[in-house]
Image (cartoon, rainbow, N blue to C red; front, side, top):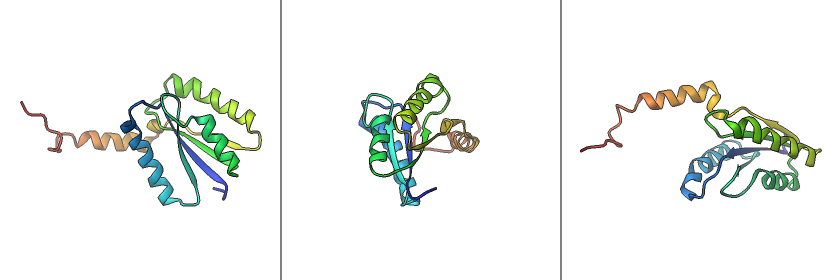
Length: 132
């Protein structure tokens, strides 16, 4: 990590403002853990900010290294086609930036193990019990 590094947590987006809370919580957690890092959320559609706007703002603030983390569970069309195309266009528009694109977070073995652990606790939890 350089002093001018940033991470963009890239998600699909939703009109529902409550949908953004988990993304913003991840951002806040990462920012607290690494205060020198510029951490942002950006969205494909339905809410702001967009990825191009976020990258342009980061570049204007002197960020030179940007890692983009797709906050998707799998590699669907957006992660497989749309996002790489967007990143390529951003790299061309901001030739001075070093932009890296990670695989979708849901395909990381650690995330898979954590989701399996949480799912395995479903029968232990009484807080979400449905009764007739």
